[in-house]
Length: 260
Ligand SMILES: NC(=O)c1ccc[n+]([C@@H]2O[C@H](COP(=O)([O-])OP(=O)(O)OC[C@H]3O[C@@H](n4cnc5c(N)ncnc54)[C@H](OP(=O)(O)O)[C@@H]3O)[C@@H](O)[C@H]2O)c1
Picture (cartoon, rainbow, N blue to C red):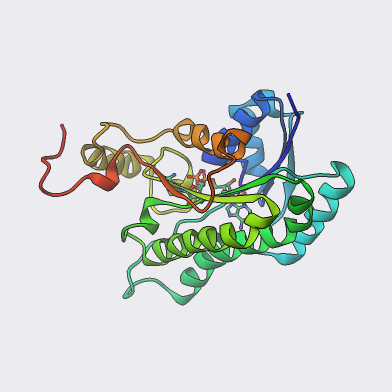
């Protein structure tokens, strides 16, 4: 099989790590961009087999200088790029009355401006590929107001970026799609201090579970299966799509009694 080169932002944790693992198992080269070496160490404890398989690069998705440096590194080391997953994301708390301007700005910088910066920086390589795929990891919180106004707005913006770029980049045979997960068990809530401790996090998962018609909270593999499909040639006619992978939470409503 053709060995492809894929860049994932935030491949050191949760959903991104699962995407990296799946792509490596399919025989592809994976590069991951993230900030903290501690999360790379944690990832390699979880998945030691990825040590020599994933090229973990240090950088911030919201920093144009980091994106340009990464572009030059990928061009020099691999000479091509077949796909990009804009997966890195942060979660902040708050309504219009409680969210600080700093948290609002930070959330939009990472979740929305970051994918714009990284996609733009990688364009020359993606155009050269002849056929390439970009997947933006959005959220159901971008389809329907969630619990954080900054997070929901950042993901709704990301979905529009997906649709806009699908039109702009289609002529280069670059496909662009959004995957919108429901609640998935990862490190995002505790790493971003949205919950004070594991106990309150687990209580939130248990409280949310009955709203999922499929009857369980998601696992990273539920999302990475769809993402790797969208990166593959089998998805060559799918672009500009906003696809929920959410155990059915988007069809849940107050008229349907919650499942026990
Ligand atoms: N888990 C869920 O319930 C859920 C639901 C819907 C959507 N999502 C979305 O799925 C994506 C992955 O989330 P996850 O749950 O897997 O989160 P996670 O476990 O916290 O992983 C996030 C990853 O993003 C990286 N990252 C964060 N800020 C970054 C930055 N500025 N530059 C580069 N890398 C950065 C993190 O590494 P560093 O911090 O070291 O940089 C980490 O590798 C996010 O976009 C999230 O919004 C998650």
